[in-house]
Image (cartoon, rainbow, N blue to C red; front, top):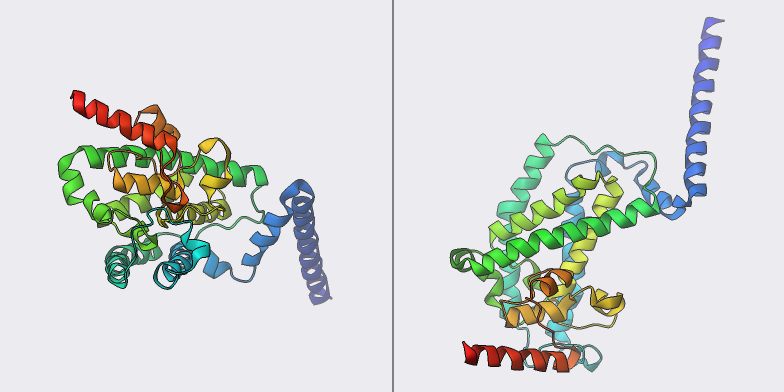
Length: 309
């Protein structure tokens, strides 16, 4: 008799839990979170993997190499592909296998000597990531990523400006990234270890300011990689952020190409407002090496100022 009552209680508890879980999910679906909730529910049955401190590291590294590879193929094997070469910014520069090997070698050793030990330490000392039942709302998901990008943009603007203005910092740290005056995709992480660690630390911690949902945090990491890679591909493609978003708010590859040509300009990694505010903005070239009127006018004024000085 007692066993029967206990068994009935267990069954009632399980059924009640299932009902409550269903109610929670239905509320989530009805409150505009449907697509995010469907994606977030992919973690079910994989909680040990997804909550591991190693998961964001593996996710970001795998995504970075997967995103860069198609552009490497276009650089090496697509030199005669007119459909993509017409979007190249510095048309007189070609990417060689030696350059690819050089940039990939540094990227590989940076990952082995710095990223891997940091990941192992994170695995040992960092507790598993708590995984909420609900996905974030669309509002939280979007504004927190934008806010994190804006914060990082300002942080890196200051870091970047400092490492150009202070000769010691430029010579011994940031000059590594400026070895190539014509960026291509693997130059994205062609960095001195100190710069790599700084960028990684800022990207990781900025979401802490907003107490982001894990899904928002990981999406922001991938978005940061997309924007960073896009700035170094050397192509002004029509579907890139700088050609999609209004008001010229994003610099993209054209702006960063100009930074590698004129290193004392265009310090912000993503947006344009800080460079325009502090008068470090240089108008970029366009696809096909086209020099727009505002760039020609900028160079004319710069020459006149130098003559006066």
